Image 1 (cartoon, rainbow, N blue to C red):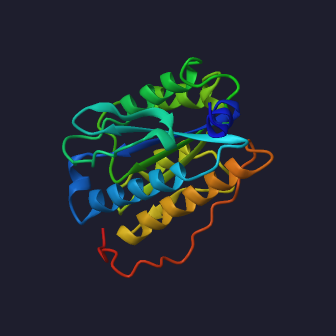
Image 2 (cartoon, rainbow, N blue to C red; image 1 turned 135 degrees about the horizontal axis):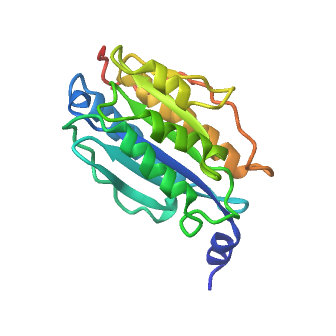
Length: 224
């Protein structure tokens, strides 16, 4: 057994779960391409983090033609490949909320010793299924209500009312993306916040999310 094996087993999980809208409307104006790159960058950054106090676990739930765990929740450093997302279908946001609620309440997947989870939703449209009860269950569940919830609305057609209700971090109100650069900046800011938590002596405490200037000159300059 190496010292890294010992550290990994001793660290407490810090779960990060992303709910990604992959409906048909995400396939225009470069939105799905920007989301794919942002997720790839996040995974690579989390994989490089140390695991002294907290070990970042990452999961990805997508909702479009169907709702699925695109990436089952697992230690970020163990994720070897990321299958790019494709956009098609409706926006079954309510079903995605139910899936993440079940995941958060599952003590085998997220043990009691885990740090407070972070749940992030990214969407560009209106839900096409019932969302009231699923969102209520997510907000009131025994364990799910304790998660930090963040929301990114992409473009002018996103359902701001539900996304605002989804978010519960007073330091991070609803974020809005008007172009591909904004999507990348949001994920960079969240990545830095979660990484800072993982290195902190108190990983349960939130770290303020701050946008930083984008240093990539070749990003898509597309308006949604």
